[in-house]
Length: 394
Ligand code: ATP
Ligand code: MG
View 1: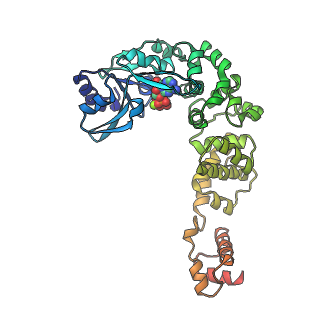
View 2: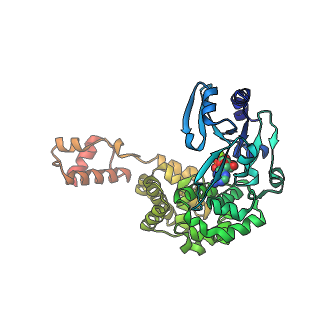
View 3: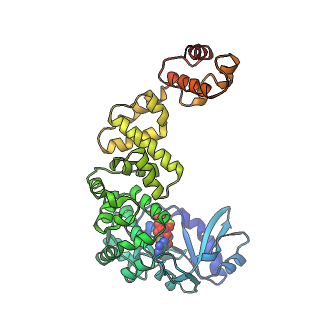
């Protein structure tokens, strides 16, 4: 078993010694069977939160209302979630009621897909109630139980199906796919933030083009923010070769560039997707750099304003469309800029005032900006004397 499981074994054993059951569940079991790397392990138990807290000395109530307690063991945290069922789902999202149960089977039944519904004991023994192992072999995403009912309970699962299909390079099983087509409109009941997370993960996974075409074929794209108006552009994504996106900013920059969006359009799209201001700002800057690269207008000033990180991201996007610069050449061009940050200027506002070039006020900012630009464009040397001289001439 992977080390993440090995080190969690004593925690599982203590729960069992207390007279309860404990299993590894969720994505880490699936990924281990597939031989993929895992990040975090989820543990499910028949013990109620209070019972877990009696077994371990150190615990933190991380999500006690849904039955999750974090156990601190050997300085590491383990989230233990009590077996539970969910019911209600009156508004197509999240259950009205979570009930703790003692039965593993009940807990596995509420899970979304057969390949996400395994439970594994600390000795490696796997419980597979829904033939998930067979689906792993057939490389299929199949809903647990009646797919249409499951998507009516929580419509986000449709987006998750597409995400896992992209991550694992699996197909969505036929009946599950039909149910998505039938229920895709329910996605508009789901909080945008939850769709956002699944969408970005899908785009960063192995087969984003498959994910986009699944969203097109099921009409899901019509029920997420903004995309409904961009069917043609979304279709063109499925023709981009070797599509690979490394982070959230690359995902949104790729989308925005593909949609040929202006700064304002990027802002309004990402506001609808409820992206953070930071993501919006960086996406705008990155797309501007992609356009600069495309038009051969990536001068020193543009590189300076973009910054190294975003420059590399922009060049990744440019690469997808075949107009990228050689990455190491681009990096050395950036590295050779006289300054990379305002803070590196050999002069500041105080110096300008002291030397009598300018009085405090808006004029000073303008002069500093001109100096910054002249520095970046190699028109002056970065030493106080040259800068003062230039300032006097402005
Ligand atoms: P990842 O590797 O991306 O973390 P994961 O399978 O662990 O994949 P999570 O979102 O972390 O996915 O969820 C953990 C587990 O909880 C899932 O494997 C699944 O069993 C269950 N689960 C999560 N979200 C839902 C949902 N909306 N409906 C039903 N079950 C869910
Ligand atoms: Mg997980």
